Amino acid sequence: MMPGPLHHLGTPDDSARPAGPGLFPERLVVGRTGPDEPIEVIATGPADAGRAGVLAALSDLDVEMLDVPAGSWLVVRHATTASRAAYVPGYRMPASYRPELPAVGPALARPPRRVELSLPKPVLKWFGLVDTPDIESLGQPGTGVLLDAVGRAGALLFVIAADQSFSGVALNLLAEVAAASVPVFFAVTPAVDVRTGPVPAADVRTGPVPAADVRTGAVVDQVSVSIAAHRAALLAVVPGLAAARWFPIVDADVEELRQALVDWSSDEVLRRGSAPPQPPGFRDRVPVLDEPGDWSESLDRQLRAATRRIRQHLALSLADLHRRAVQEILFGVGCAGLPRFLDRELEAISLLVTAQCDQLVRTIVGDVAGRLFGAPLPEGVHRRIDDAVSWGLTYHTSGPELRRALLVTSGADVTGMTGAAAVDAMSAYPAAVRTELLPPLAVALAGGCWQHWRTPGRNDPDAARAWVQRALREVELELPRELARRFEVIRLSLGTVLSDAADRGTLLA
Image (cartoon, rainbow, N blue to C red; front, side):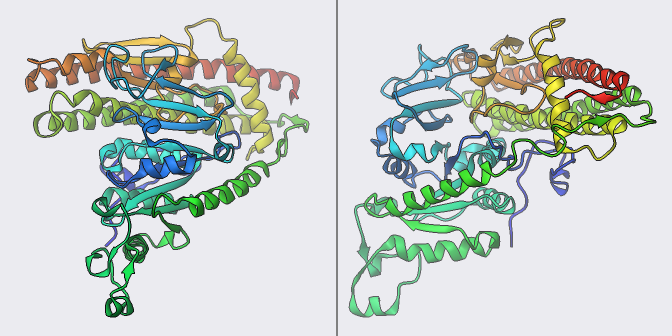
């Protein structure tokens, strides 16, 4: 029986309505690949599967170089000069990071959301490598963040040991990825206790051994034998992965896997580059309809409805988060693990609210502009309107900076930091140049939260519950203010563009 859908941020029945084109996204799903996104492979899998060793062999590195603090993502990309940087919420610039130093200490008050490693390695010219926390440690929100990253990067590498099995979390993740037609590669490593080489046939416990091997007593490769069992167990639940390729990793030999990833990246470059640079309508004259209707009133009404809808969903998400945070304090991670749990949850909420804003703004632009120029709006015309609106947002000086990151402090308050660097430091997986009109929303916990709740003598569940309630209440108050401010500048900028077009009788080139 196939496991149920991933639990997500929202009401219990949201999974019955998956996000799609033109629909309000109520949970995080596989992200959309853009032509400007870097071609990368997201690696995940259970703990103790030797994933770091596989990635080190793929990139021709020592495995120690891939060490990052627990819970942080690692992004390995090509560069002519080697460098390493940690992106920590609350820091305006990337912090230097060396794996031989403590992950959390005077240098870094909290774990970074991501560590970027840039190296002059030839294979990284073909594709970047992104290592994620162990899949069971991601939790429900972390899995949503992973899904978004997999879609934008382009491919998933799932590393599992010969003596391990697919968990329910892994099967749900793979089912979502398969449904989105994202390529998946499987690497099967030796069992933890026999990674030094092959074992006798009698010791293989992960799958059936051919009868000829049993009769002759020959030595068989445990990894190759287990692949058939792994694949059969997976396809019984996720038949959409029948075309996925499997690679045994024995004695750190990843040459076949590396070649497969290089072949995939070559095809991916062509696929992403095949989109026309100027879609239909990008240069054509676009006249205003004879009777466009009251588009201005429609714009105001739809923006108010969009703000109300996101606020309602946010309130439900935060209420559900508060309930689960109390459960974790009392029966799960406790007070010391509260900052990491809450930080991951707020990261997922940030991504979800950003996706909701993007979808609603795009829908509103298409609907309102369609009243002036005719619906459906061609993609080229849509892009021209977006470019004009973006120009208005860039030079909007009547209010504070739109690119603003929110930090939850140890006092359960919310403070803000402005600037693109502050927002980028809160991304576990860095985005390419955004094509959407609004900058992303970003919420994280400040480093003082880690210092506060890991201090001896602060293991007080009642105090932790009260702190969570205050902190989430502040988030619930501050995020809607950000939403209202962003939608207001959209109203002003889009209204200016469309008013000018209505007065001239045509959309400016």
